[in-house]
Image (cartoon, rainbow, N blue to C red; front, side):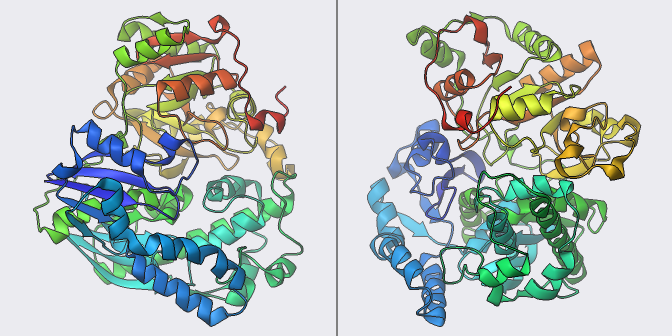
Length: 604
C-alpha cells in the first residue's frame, strides 16, 4: 500500500511516502528548487519520493493533501467580507491564485501527477495531530497542535489512542499564538514565517519589559491557556502587514527596518513575547493534562518548533515525557496526512513500544553513494582525497580539534528545519571564538544567533540539565552547573555585550542565559556521526561539537554534492567531507560565484 502525502501553497511545501504504514521518504520542495520556504506544488519532492522507492504514479494507492482548501477559502472570504472595504488590496492580491489554482486541488493533483486514483483531504490540524502522534513512541498520548492558522483552527488538543486520534477542542482564527509571535517577528524587523526562530534566539539578550502590556492590551489569557486577541492592534486580518499604527504607538514607534541595527527595544520585545508564549503553552499543557489524564504529550504545528517553550513544559513535569514532530510546521503536514489515511481512514493497526519512535532520526531525504559523489567531483575537476571511513572520521575529529570548520555531508538528508548530522557544519564547542567565526564567516548571519550542540546521548546529563534523549534538537536545557564558569559583573552587561563572555567549558554552544538547543546523537539512527563524536571524545575528552545547518543565510540546507560544494566554496569553511571524500579549501581552484550576503557583513 503506497500513500503519498502532500503539503503545498502556504509555505514549506513537502511530500512524504508511506508504504504499509512505514515512513519511507520525505523532503521539502525548497531543497530541490533552492528557494527557501518554497510553497509551490512539490513536484521535485514527489519525484524523489517515488524514484527512491522505484515507483511510478500508477503504483500510488492514495494521494492525500494536508488540509481542506474549500474550508480555508471559506475562512478567507468570511474574513474579507467582515473587514471590507479595508482588506481590498489583500483580497485582490490573493484571489486570482485561489480561483485559478488552490480551489481545484484535486484536479491539480491529478493533472500534475497524471493520477486517477483517490485523493483525500483531512483537516489541517488533523494532519498536524497525526504527524505528532503516529510516529511517536507512545501507544496513547495527549496531543497539542499550535500554529498560525489552518482552515479555521489555530490551536487544538485531543487524544491519540492505538491507531486513532480524536480532536477534543480548538481555538479559532483570528486568535492565534503563532500569528501573535509572527506579529512581533514582523515588528522587530525579521521575516514572517522564517524569522521567528531569530526572535527566540534574541530573547535572552532582553528583559521582559513588555509582558504586562502584551497581556493587558493584546491578549486576554485565561487560566486554561485559552485566549482572545485584541484585533484592534493587528492588521493580518485584512491588510498586507502583521501590525498597525495602534500597535506601533503602543510600543513606541514603527517596526524596525530589516537589516538595521538591533536595539535594546527589539531585545526586550523578543524576550517579552517569548515569555508570554511560554506562559500560554504551559497553561495549555496543564489544561490538556487535566482534561485527558494522559501520561504523555505529543506536539506539532509551527509553534512546536519553539524549543525553549518545549523545554519548559518538560521541566515542569506536567507529563512523564513529550515527543515533538521534527518537521513540526507545514512540511510535516504531508507526513501526518499520509499516516492519517493509513491508520485512521484505513483502520490499520499501530503498535508503539514506548521507547523508540518511527521517524528514523528524520533521515528521510535523498542520499548519495560514494560512487555518485566521486562522479560529481571528477566530472568537475575538483581536488579531493578518498580514504576509508575510519580514516575519514578520525581526520574529521582532528580537524575540528585544530579549530577548523568542517562541512559534513553524509547519508540521507534530514526532513524538517534542523540539520542533525547529515547536512551539517561542524566546529569545536570549546572555542570562545567559534560562535562569532561561524556566524560571520560561514553562515553570514547575525552575530547574536546561538549554535546548537550535538552530544553523545549517554553523555548528555554530564554537560546539560537534561535527563533524556533529544534527537531532533527540539528541546532547550541549561548547561550543567559543573560545566559553567563564574561571570563577574553579569548584571552590568546589557544587550549584545553579553555575547563576548565565556560562560562554560563549551562557550560556543552556551547561550547568554546558559541554555543550549540540544541534539543527542544515537548509533542506531546515525552510525557515522555517532562514530565521529565517540572518537572526538576518546581522543580529546569532549563528547560535544557544534552542529549548525549546512547552508548560508537566506538559502535552504544543501541537498546534493553540488549544493554542498558551492556552499563550501562561497564561505570560509576550511574542509568539506562528503561520504569518504575529503576536500581541503587550500587545494581548490578559484571560485568566482559570490553570494549576496557577503556584502552585508564585515568578515574580519
